[in-house]
Image (cartoon, rainbow, N blue to C red; front, side, top):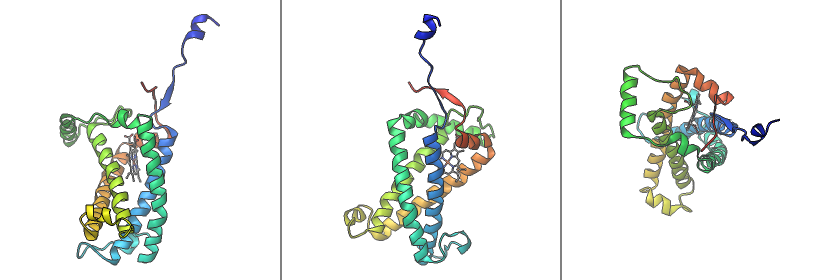
Length: 214
Ligand code: HEM
């Protein structure tokens, strides 16, 4: 073996979606779907928007109390997994690398191109500006759901939080609107994943190899 071969550093590479990201992403998807479906079951028992009920066929739990049990069970999975994802994202620099920077000009350009059906998705390793923005919004919506959820779960212990959120009914409304943001995101997110199936395969297998982090 020549000296040059020995001296050369072994190039470190990693997958686009390392295994912890894949496990946390799909765990989050399962927990979120249970939270949404059971949340609809709880909502039906005391509606916020008159006339808006969710059909039994799409709610989790046969009746409100059962939906509540599902909601509280999935809550722990969602919070533990979400906390792990946030710690991982900040500690490894993934958030900075994949989600930043987001420039208004780039967002406008991406929206314009998309409306003209010029969606660039040859390069899986880069999120476009709209994707970055949507991912940030949904991560923040997830955090807002946990905070408002804790407030309406334990309104006496967290009465200060209830006050900050403008009272119990206002906290309920915030929790409901957060759900609407997440469901809206999911519709677009899943539709795009199905339109560009390579991204879906990558979220299962890890996707292409990318260079080591700087
Ligand atoms: C249930 C069906 C779901 C499918 C089929 C799906 C699919 C995907 C795919 C294919 C990607 C990679 C996108 C790309 O590389 O261009 C992705 C990333 C992502 N998804 Fe989902 N997803 C689902 C549920 C969710 C849910 C429920 C959330 C959050 C509420 C979510 C949040 C995210 C985020 C934040 C990323 C970026 C992850 C990162 O790069 O760290 N997904 N998803």
